[in-house]
Image (cartoon, rainbow over all chains, first blue to last red; front, side, top):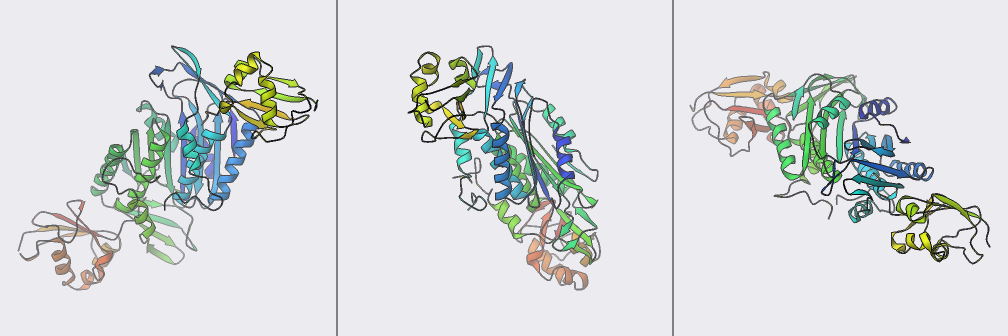
Length: 158
Length: 158
Length: 87
Length: 87
């Protein structure tokens, strides 16, 4: 399930809702991304997330389908917020539930890495020095690249 | 922080409490382990977790300190329940919060893998065929072994 | 001309172009993403500013990522934006 | 004898020994975990049953994991249990 919204989310509530629709689950992993107070040495007043309505939902649905194809996931959820967010605010939530903990961990990391490099969101930071667009990080591309396999589960633990 | 208890826990409540005492966090990972309804082809009525009071707390505190030493973790929590638990019940909760998502993911997996192989808990399953002690899995030892490095963060992503 | 297509811009590309979107009718030889970017850049002003470093520009055609060789045509929705920074 | 030590048993080791714990005073030559296990096994009955496959037995001395060479002595708390299955 995917949700793109301005409203905040409650991890506990989302987790319970997901568990209610999942069967055979042994391990559940959540990742919550929050707005950091400091960006480099600049203290943030706020961050504004712009996105591409339509393409965002399409990309998130594609990424989730890919994770379900590659790992034995019983249930999953991706929530990504947009709009103005203050330090400490939730940005993104990814939940993956599986019979096996390793699948839950790997699928979750996969989703988070791909969100960072594929989902059409852009962060505009506002601080004492004014507003500036966050630049994409090469390390995020590298993190996403490690999941590039042509078929079967990722084999990053040889 | 570690807790060994019979009472259930609420992931949302624990997450909020942890965030209230953490600073500079950008990503939070939670792992929740729950009692599976099926063990092999046997439908479980319940599971009873026995533990070694005293040593359990000592091992959990040691494991947590090791994770904090190896990764830049701002806050962490380990809760492990014992006693009688029915299918779907929470068993274990591990939360790791860091400025960087990869540290939060890695430290969390490290803690879960070590809990499985070091924390003195034993599962007694009750099903239609009677009660039986769960046998330790070689795959859990292998999962824990991948974290055996002498110093510095784990380098499993060469 | 190949017919009208919808252009949309995001983040600093939107700011440099000076608008969030528009409907344009490029000349008939503009049939690929690469050709469209070069033609737009040639329009000068905000376009030239926004597109001066094409390595920092990502393109989606009808909401799917597209490379320079991808075809574009009438009624397509073509989005230009910087590398994404969500998650 | 080396003095009394406290033995504790968990999971199926507890069931086979038939008790959760006891205070024992092994002979003076029992100064290591390995010697203690062999001596206990020699007591027959539930001990022999519980310890027949030592590869399935883990030991902690004073709540820290200990190998066969580890020293044991008076007032130590020695725990015997199967490989753990928590988490």
